[in-house]
Length: 67
Image (cartoon, rainbow, N blue to C red; front, top):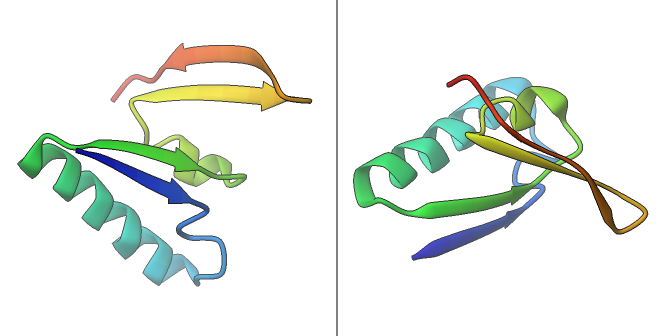
């Protein structure tokens, strides 16, 4: 199962953003789901296992994080 999340925290305050991200991470771990998340928020992105950065439709970096 893959969860596609386009800016899931975009219009949320910090507390609700953190709760949303915790739920996505829990779901990913507990049910072995892949979460594909699009965000402009660096703090949110840094919670991921892998970050792919695009510029003008091209991949400019592809990094595994230290989680």
